[in-house]
Amino acid sequence: MVSRKMILILIFTFFYYTSSFASNPSYNVKSFGAKSDGNSDSTKAFLSAWSAACATTQPASIYVPPGQYLLRNAIFDGKMCKNKAITIRIDGTLVAPSDYNAIGKNGTWLKFQKVTGVSISGGTLDGQGTKLWACKNSGKSCPKGATSLAFYSSNNISIDSLSSLNSQMFHILIYNCHNANLNNLKISAPPNSPNTDGIHLQQSSGVTITNSRIGTGDDCVSIGPGTSNLWIENLSCGPGHGISIGSLGWDLEEAGVENVTVKTATLSGTENGVRVKTWARPSNGFVKHVLFQHIVIVNAQNPIIIDQHYCPDHNYCPTQGSGVKISDITYQDVHGTSATEVAVKFECSKSNPCTGITLDRVNLTYGDKAAMASCAYAGGTTYGDVAQVAYR
Image (cartoon, rainbow, N blue to C red; front, side):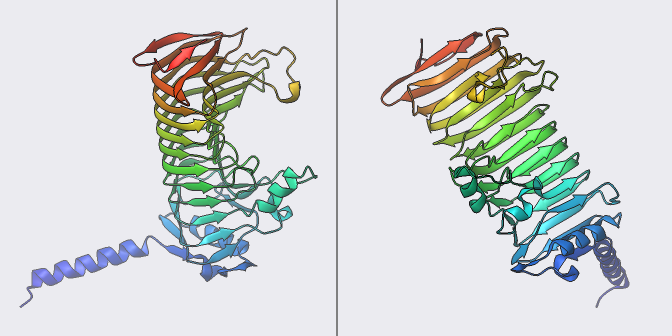
């Protein structure tokens, strides 16, 4: 026989969970008119679901069921958003228009700006960039292209278990943001796809990138001016141009890059391994306090490189010298193979030499012999087993 006390407990539990559910509304994009056929324009429906979630102060979710949803350029604006905890759960695929002109002239396909507490979980973004890359590679006049997913001036962001395919330009852009957690991402585009950086960061702090696989036609991760307190761990990169700090130093007055850790990463068949790249121009920018730790490199063209002479076509570089100050860069437990004889290249600025460069247990080979290193205007120390790198 059920006691009165037990009945009261059951009633309390029912009302507790019922009220909790009611206070956390969920908005299905199909309820706002979205079609999962991949052909009907669902942009308005997605923006309507966003507006509904923003109108409540309770944590809310936007749900995208299985299927394909065609979206044009969409801006999810947080300026008037009351909600500081919106989760977008995607079980389907968001598809860009097949005509690259439809979004290629607007810079960004899916743009979040001035949002706080937004989480994206699951799903796939298909930028359908193939035709635009063909246009660019043919030398014809083409639009610049659109970044697939961008966050601007936002805080407390989470992107988890998202796949991004064939972006026209960058796959993911984090600009002027604070506290962003990117985890378990799968980003892919062919090696011949121009400017398809996996993740680009700029003017942002407190970003973590973990447990992700990136292979594109450009940098797996590119780290731009004003980036600080960045943590990258357990990353698989390739094909692509590797992990790059820069290019930096285009502007005379430019924010620096500091406190960057890249830990437990594998780079396979990439053009570069871990790179720092600056324009050969006057600048007050800097790079400091960077750690590359537990890095495996497989057949990269330039496994370790600092290039302070970047100046494509030798234009816009009046002094041919970089003003960016590079200091306190540590390479610790970096091992693997180089596709070229010179595996370590430190080409620092003559007018502003690199300082505090540390090689700690760097073991790189070329074929069946030790790889070479080329160092110019770089000062630092070596520790542990670095016998496999012969200096010249």
